[in-house]
Length: 312
Image 1 (cartoon, rainbow, N blue to C red):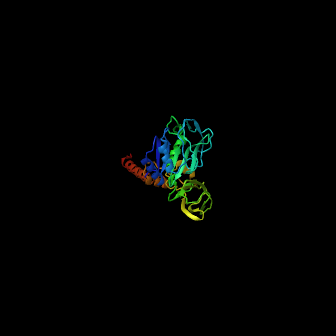
Image 2 (cartoon, helix red, strand yellow; image 1 turned 90 degrees about the horizontal axis):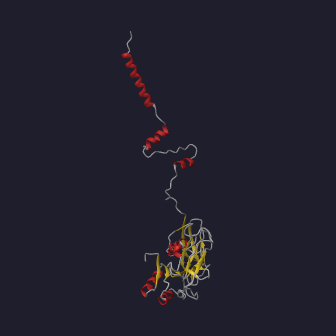
Image 3 (tube, rainbow, N blue to C red; image 1 turned 90 degrees about the vertical axis):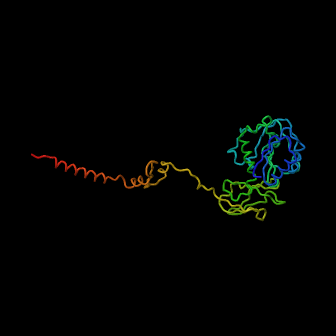
C-alpha cells in the first residue's frame, strides 16, 4: 500500500476479508491505529488479535478511568512535550477493555490509566505496527479527541513508525530513531554502534523488530555501523542539517550592524538604476558638466553685453 497509516474508528466488527487485508498491510510495513467500537464483536476481533499473536483482550466494560501517564521515551511521544507538567490535560474514559498480558506478542504501553491498565498500546508485527486504543474514540466514552496536545502527535507519529527503518541517509539531531528486524535469539543490549564514535544505543524490542534510539550521541557526520552482536546489521550515513536553502535575508540595518570599518552598504531603491546608483555612490556627484554649462552661459552673456552696451 502507498499509505503509512490506516485509522479504524468504532467498527462493530471486522469481517474475514478486512482482517486478511489488515494483516497483510501490517506485515508489509504498514501501521494501523485501531479504536474498537464500544460493543465490538468479540469473536471477530478475537480472530484478528490471534492473527497478530496477541494476548486475549476482554470486552468493553462501562467504568470510568483517567489516563495517568504517557511513556515519553517512546517514539510516539519522544520530544513532543517541552517539559514535565503535572497539570497537563489527559484523556478520561467511561468504558474500556483490558489486556490479559499472558503470552502473545510483546506490547509497549504508550499511555496508562491510573490503575496501571493500558490505554494505548503499540504492538509490533513483522515490519509494521498495530497501535491499539483500549477505549472507543466516540466522545461519549472517551475525551481523547478533545485533548489536542495528546491526540495530534499520537496520530501523526503513528504514521511515521515504519518510515524510520529504511531511510537512505539520516540527519544529525533529527533522525534519532530507526527500526530494524532483529534476528532470532537477539534481545535488547545486543546492538552497538561503531564509527567515528562508538557507543551502545537505547534499544527497545517491539515483537520481531528492534527500535534503536541514538539519544543525541551522534554529533559527527560520517558512516556508522550498527552491530548485531559482532556482525554488521546495517550501515548508517549521518549528515549535518543543510542550511543552504534558508532564504531568509538580513535587513539593511542588520547588514550595516554586521559590516566592519571601510564597508559601505548601499540601499538601492527599486525604482533606481542599480548601475548608475553604484557609480554615483563611488565617484560622488560630478559637477564638471555644470561648470562647462555655466562658463558657456557667462561667455554668451559677455558677448551680448559687449554688443548691446553703448558708450557715449
